[in-house]
Amino acid sequence: MSAVVKLSNVYKSFGTNKVLDGVSFEVGRGEVAAVIGQSGSGKSTALRCINALETIDGGTIDVCGHAVHDEKLDRRSLRRDVGIVFQSYNLFPHLTAEQNIMLAPSCVKKVSKAEARDLAKDVLARVGLAEKAGHYPEQLSGGQQQRVAIARSLAMQPKLMLFDEVTSALDPQLTGEVLKVMEDLARGGMTMILVTHEMAFARKVASQVVYMHKGKVWETGPGAMLDSPRTPELASFVGSGL
Amino acid sequence: MPSFSLVHLEFLGWAALWTLGLSAIAFIGGGLVGFAVALMRISPIRWLRYAAIGYIQIVQGTPLLILLFLIYFGIAIAGFQEVPALLAAGVGLTIYSSGFLAEIWRGCLQSVPKTQWEAAECLALTPWQRMTRVILPQAMRIATPPTVGFLVQIVKNTSLASVVGFVELAQAGKLINNSIFEPFTVFMVVAAIYFAICFPLSTWSRRLERKLNVSRR
Image (cartoon, chains in turn brown, purple):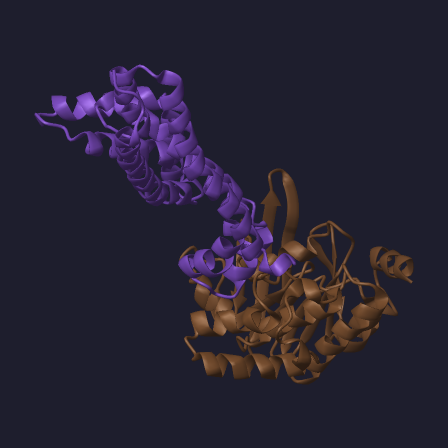
């Protein structure tokens, strides 16, 4: 089975600060990879590189058949295959939940308005917010906004979903409702890469955990590796998180 | 000697229409050029950015009066004998307005958070779709007060067009005063007409702001 995402020896610096220092990992179809690590370990940057939000200095990244490291990359075609959800939701404040979701399908895929509306209804129901279609983002709680943001990505029927610390701005109760949506997605066979601080969630849902430290992949393995870390760095990271 | 009468008021009324017309030309022309320059100013292409910065600096650093002279005599030197005053004044005010509107709107576009640009980009929108569907609707709400504020400046600055022989409201006032020598009466009426044009603009700005405020009730 070919990998949906494959990073090989990826390097990235901001000025003199080496953020990614030879990062390699693979994520197969239907897999859920959780990228964990301290702040500044490069995990969010790695995720942004996968979606070409950052350009890399060296190495290769292949995503759903797109050579992301290639200068001639067709970014729009990459982004039709890859959905991303951000920590700060980034919903469009001047559009209702439904309009937020309808925008990309109607602009990019040119589906009719009626079809886009049906699609919005469908994905809103999947995240449990069918009744919030007409609400503006500021009328929704943080958890609801994040679920609309997930629905907005889903409406483009991506082959891969990226989640960048999507629960970090939420309180525990709201975190729970967002994680539940993500768990349902994982069950449905969506290929996902999530940068997260939710260790319990990573252990339970992830088929692969990637522990990053100082811009390198320090340790990688199944969720159970969190219970028996091989390196002292992961041991102390997991220990401090409990 | 005749004193201020209805005939004079009628003359001022016609001149006020020219002031309005010239303001409209300056705002529409300046808006089109200014928006293009604002887009160049935030372009990822470096030379476009520098060209826009240069244009804005030169326009903002030149008095409108001198700009009008340069254009009026420039066109004449270029070989056109009769320069219509409307053309010279229209071009001058268009350039002047574009230099300021470009910088106002550049700031408004950039005040839409970077994360909004990224989110739109990540949904595979084209740069044009991103601009028209995501960024502009948000930037317009921010842009309304300074834009209308500048529109009021344009209305008042059309009075400088008199130097190239254009008879607008201020020039008409001068002409009337030259014949009846009642400066206080004449220029009070002129001031009142300017105010009657500018005041509704400010009121309209506030209404527009509330209307565009739909997401922040």
